[in-house]
Length: 230
Image 1 (cartoon, one colour):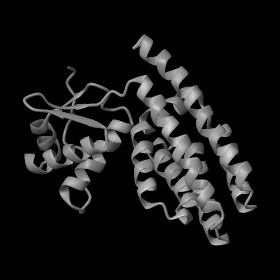
Image 2 (image 1 turned 135 degrees about the vertical axis):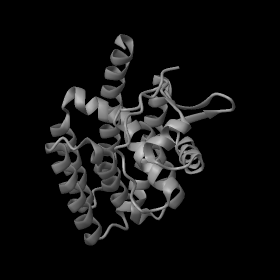
Image 3 (image 1 turned 90 degrees about the vertical axis):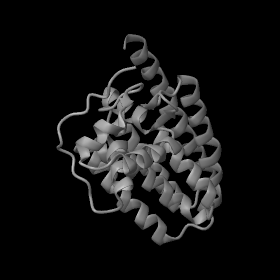
């Protein structure tokens, strides 16, 4: 088990609840790759680094465990999870099934306001790609897709999908950084939005299915290679 390599006290928390602030900060450090698969997250060290007690650290780690980013075992502490390649593939298969279904139900209820708000989010996502602002890629990508899906009214489906996106985000970031596939992602998002605006349900769902499958295929090839040489 590798140590987490926690550094000096240079991370400051926003004034929301302390466990939530800790969760958000640690989550970003996991998604960015600062904490890698298998790294130990030592509660005492984290508490010292953030100048807080162990109790909010424990709660933050439990929240991260619920989202699938951390594994906690009795007498062994917390470690950053490693998702097997086959399970990552399964998560993308789940995305295909759920997102295509929810988009199909959403388009018939989509308003011009929904399209306009999705376009604003997409503009922000494209800027984050151009600026290589990796910390915002996952959040904005999910926000864009979620905005298109909201009219379907599938609250539970969106909750599941948000968690799936979170679990795969660190691998998507790694893939984008290794392949610089920003232009293709931009193009597909723009076309998806255009088809949704035209209420071209069949074409939009088909494009979304291809978009997710292409991303999965390219990511898995790159991830298998990365893990084989790590």
